[in-house]
Every structure is written in C-alpha cells, then in structure tokens.
Amino acid sequence: MALPLVLLTHPLPPEWISSLQGRVRLLVGPAEPSGFAPHLLEQIGEAEGVLCLLIDRIDQNLLDLAPRLRVVSNMAVGYDNVDTLACTHRGIPVGNTPGVLTDATADLAMALLLSAARRLPKAAMDAKDGFWRTWSPTGWLGSDLRGATLGIVGMGKIGKAVAQRAQAFGLKLIYSDHKQVFEASLPFNVEYRSFDELLSESDFVSLHCPLTIQTKGMIDATALKKMKRSAILINTARGPIILNAALIQALRESWIAGAALDVTDPEPLPPDHPLYDLPNCFIVPHIGSATHGTRQRMAEMACENLLAGLDGLKLPNYVNPDVYGS
Ligand code: GLV
Image (tube, rainbow, N blue to C red):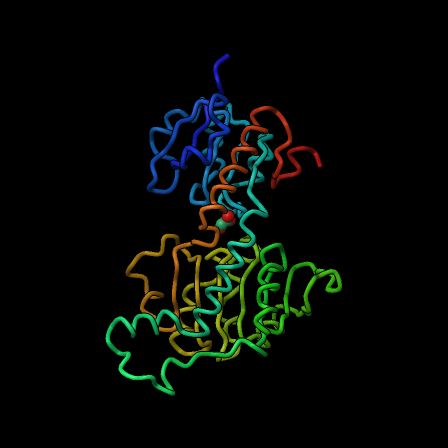
C-alpha cells in the first residue's frame, strides 16, 4: 500500500522528524517564504496530512483543494493560523504542541521584561558605540523589579510559568483572565483583577492570552491610556493583540514608558516599520520557543499528532474537540 502523502510546509532537521521515516511520503516546502509553496499546492489534492508552522494559513480555500486531507498538525501551541471550524466541519483534527514550550516562552518573557526594565538594548548599543566614557552615577538608569507590580494577562500555562519566575524577582503579581483561576490553587501569590484594574495598577504588563476574536486589538488606545506612564508592555503572545497605531502613539507621546515585543503585526515586521524607530521599544523576531530542545520537542509532538491522525487515532494534542464529538 502506498504511504500517505504529507506536506511539510517548511524544512525541519531530519532528526526532529525521524518518526515519520517509512511512515509517510514527505513533500517538503522551502524555508521561505511563509505559506504553501507552489509545488506543494500542486500536490495538495493528494495530501492526507499537513505538518505546518504558525506562518502558514490553513483556511477554507486550502481545505477545498485538499479533499483527501485527514489531519492538520501545527508545530506551535497557538493555532490562530488555522480555521479550526472549517477543519472540524470537514472532520479534520488539528494538532498543536502545548506544554513543551511553556518554560522557553516564559524565560523569554522574563528576558524581555528584564531587558526593558534595565534598558539593556540601549546600554549595549551605547557601550559598543563609544558612549561608555566613565562609570556614570546617573547613566542608563532603569526600573527596580522588587516591589513593582507585574500584571499577567492570561493565566494559562505560560502565564503561570512567568508568575513563578517573577515571584523570585520580588514582583507583586496580579492577573486577568477570561476565567478567574482559583487563586488558592496557584503555587504563588497572585491576585485577580479586572482587565482595566490590571492595566492601571501594573508597572509591567505581560500578555499571555491566545489571539481570538475577543483578544484581537485588546491593547488599543483606551487600554494604553489606562496604563501607568512608567509602565512597560511585554508581548510574547501574538502581535495582533496590540493595535500598532495605538502603541506607536503611546510610545511617542509617553503614555507608557516602553514596550518589548517578541511578536508583531505583521510578521515579519518590515525593517522600515515605525516601531523600530522608537527608542523606548525593542523587538525580537518571534523567538519565544526558540531553544534547541524546545523546538525539537515541538517537532516531535507535531509528528506524533500527525501520525495519530493518519492512523485514525485521536491526536495526543488537539484543539478542535468537536471533531471527535466531544
Ligand atoms: C509560538 O508562538 C507558538 O504558538 O508555538
């Protein structure tokens, strides 16, 4: 029997996807650009599985080209790039990779928080550019963490991992979430706040919610105006949660003190984008889960989901339970 055809939208190291060997016929897209390359689209009518990245859109148009598709495996925890309703409608389970990237992403959120609080990008650039001429008592002053308040928006796995790290730095923790997580069950001291309360009380606001219709554009001008003028905004979730125009105005007009972004809208953010010109904003290229171990484990999980789907088994991690009637 012929092995099922699987489209891997972009190359992954062979050792990360070794479980696919002998199990599928793999057609691999190029490293760039995002999306399905023409040679993959030519074959999509035959494909039974897709292993894709968060930069690939899986929508109704694509599904219409793929009558034999039986599983979509997204190598990411977020799945806003996939039209899950359309997949469910077609009976296609959608897999994701939760858990394994929690620590790496929380580490990066803390790295951004620390870098912004202590102005590391500016200090490093000034040292390199010859502005480090003496030990200046007033040079490169940042903000203290101990005693400051961190507002965590979205108390899921990553939000909790950030809270644990932040507690060790002496930050006071508050959170908002669409559901109120029972505080006594959390292994650190954290208090629930409404979104508006969180914005006005926090010295640092870190976003850890998924991108949904409810969260898209949630950090708009109204939200930014509620924040302290000394506050720093950190985003390791998804770019479109923040409205760019509002953030640019907030940073230019000092409604808030700064922003540190791992995710942007769009991605990649073009080099001439005005956000790059703001001295109180710094941006890294969506690297929350970018450690060797984490990315390998994500790829392995994506393969496990893919193979289960091809075998007609429940995926170990799926995001559209309705596809199984539950
Ligand atoms: C990364 O952003 C992910 O969703 O895995």
